[in-house]
Length: 206
Image (cartoon, rainbow, N blue to C red):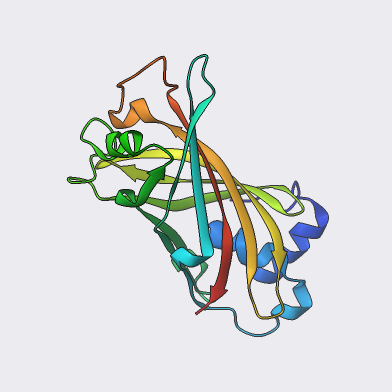
């Protein structure tokens, strides 16, 4: 649970006004709206469509820079319940078959059974479990990443990048995971174990 005593003052004031949503939704919505504007209800469902999210990744290659790519089909949903904060949640789903790099052979390899194995495990899923405030517009988010049928805990850094008068909020997420934890050990150590992620986009109430 986030401590209001240790959170930066401006952000802590907003958190008190927003209630204690223990998920990434807290960061994306509450961190960017002045407390007086939250007088009305904020419960509801917020949909993140593929057109609103850019998800890139990179893996370092020993002595040769890195392999870079992106996922073109990423979707998500935030469900906020102001009266029952414990019911609030956020989820993001990645269609692994939408992976793309600038090399067709590399793209095909990533889809193969040696890596993402999209034929057997077409989707990756992230669900937040806890948030820790780190700045006036940033937080560390803990959650469960499910990949290749395995569930592992991971941490992401979230920064709110802007808001719109129409209820939209911009965000950027950085972090990563160790592919060896999910059975993707091929190419180690020439190809690094850590897969770096960068996700940016906007969310809007549906």
